[in-house]
Length: 113
Length: 114
Image (tube, rainbow over all chains, first blue to last red):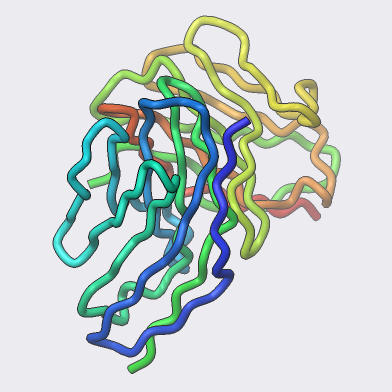
């Protein structure tokens, strides 16, 4: 069975600085999708970034980028120039074909001003 | 703007009554929708997969008679919590895949059973 592990329950970052959230996963599949979702205090789940496993190039969305290491089954999220609005719970998720999303336990990110 | 709309955002009901939560895909058709339950500061727990025109697929340990799911159209899935009890109080979220397996989520429903 596929599993997703986020080993950092909480992280803190100073405003304007960079932070990296870790995620590892386990799968026997070769073609799948990986996601990072943000859940702010409103609890609305927001898609931050996605990565197709067949693409070697790391996905980037403005200040958000990933470091996708397929062989190591690692998918970390880097947030540059952190802003107060980035404070939220971040979930790493895995999806194979049309099946269900598998979520990690989440990482609470606090941004200090 | 929101692509998946969920209503109501919050609801309080008396113990023993039933509550219906709606999940709509706004500008796309969703043959499959997903229902989750989330406890404070925890991850999302998949309850069931809602399939248009057929029976829902429930995850192990989820009572199908308590959590009734109906996916009557390509844009609407409903979750009915029947004979609600205080332990059913939680945050319920739906999602639907739009393009390329990217899931979009509803706003969530906070259910409080008193």
